[in-house]
Amino acid sequence: MSNKNDLVTAVASATGLSKSDAAKAVDGVFQAITAALKGGDEVRLVGFGTFAVASRAASEGRNPRTGDKIKIPASKQPKFKAGKGLKDAIQ
Image (cartoon, rainbow, N blue to C red):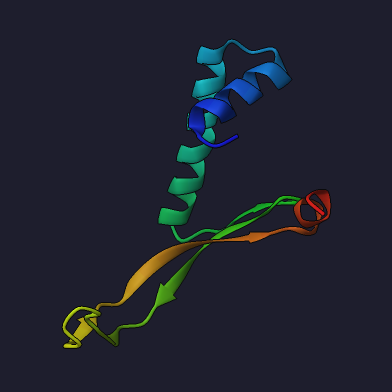
């Protein structure tokens, strides 16, 4: 599975939903996770993993082409930490 269409096809096959309904379900899950993270919440899926937002402090970096110093602004980054069930399933 390498893209969203493959995921939709797999969900449709596993659940017996039409591809259209499976696409709505997949989109709904993505939207719900995004909304929770935007609101400052974590999304914990027991046995699968945890989606969270990490704050990254401002820092100073270098332009790799010129070597000039550049300021990297503070930002928020989405993070995913795999749960034990997912880790065990892929080993």
